Length: 496
Image (cartoon, rainbow, N blue to C red; front, side, top):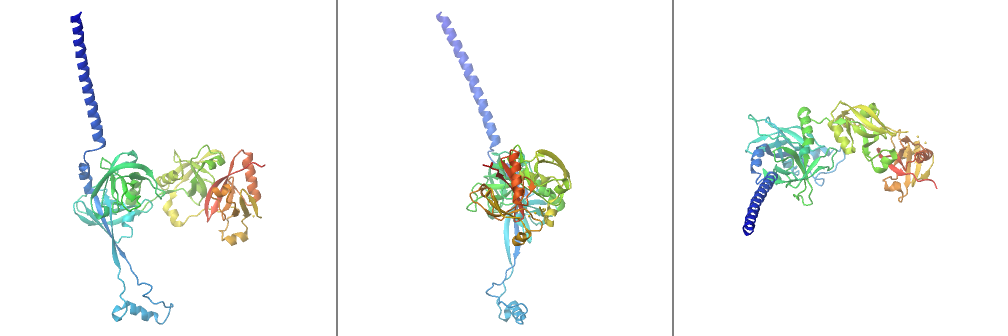
């Protein structure tokens, strides 16, 4: 028994030893895997990437001639046509005769960054870097300096395309897919901060889809250091592809505090392609004014959720020709759902000019599919396209906290209103009312209620009754303020 006991004990020790070695090997393997993943997500050095992309990044110096004038205290004030006008003109134009020295035009310089996108010398930067410049000089990483000409700009996205001429192919970088990048991914900013030239900073993507103030904004937010002079420079992913154009920073000090913004490459590529082909952008245009659908607006319309873009005005052009009406909610565009106004504006712009697209609108409880042939936004804006008018007639009344009176010819003259504007003029408003809280103000004109024209207080009362009978808790009013239309949904309280 004793020998048997010893034999069992030795066997156990051998099994434990084997299990220990197996566990150690497993732990070592797992540690190697973790280290490998860590090495892939956070490189020991960005040096190889910097060497790869730096030759395509450029410093940009612009020169602008600024005219200066004599101060008002130096120039005499003479009535036009005065006999002394020529005398004083000669006096001030000839300082040798005792007149003051005329200030000479001065030149101001600005610095920025950019990057080459083709071997034949096309470069991308920010519009604000070169705006108004008389001369644009490009300095390459190799020390080569070349003058650049402006191909085209797009102030809406702050992007500009330049061109340089050189006998030999130039090093360049390519755009990547910003949509494939994720928050937390490593990025590299290369540029000319504060005139230091070819400076590199690293960070991560802090957020995506940021909007600053433009209709087409799609900014990547990063904590990579971006300062003045970095504008127009590239934001690289770890594959050496440009996924953003460094454009702006958020800072109370004027220096980097880790909140920088780069325009997404997915916006930039379309703009650059158009600038390269046409020298300008050519965006699609529907010809409507729109606002977001809020919860109360959705309820007033009978829409199932806050989605789509509510049409507040239909201008002469594509949408009117296609049958779109004021009060429609555009819920689908070109085969895809519309989330909100920003989503629709960007998708229409990218859809192209002259294309016939399907537009699905929610109208009076049903979805209607319309075919709209898109126009060109730039042409429409140049022509100053405006919206249509509305319907007419009498006496002051109060309802829903509003003091209302019909728009009469006399009132139209008093208010200097455009011919054709009809409806109910808001003479006064109770500041404790829901209407005030929803943004209605004295001076607004109610042109529609429940998506029907209103010309008198009785019209508005009838629309409210119809909304109650239909079981709706609110009614949609179409207002105009300084010519701009807006929908507001107000609660229709039950009669006591």
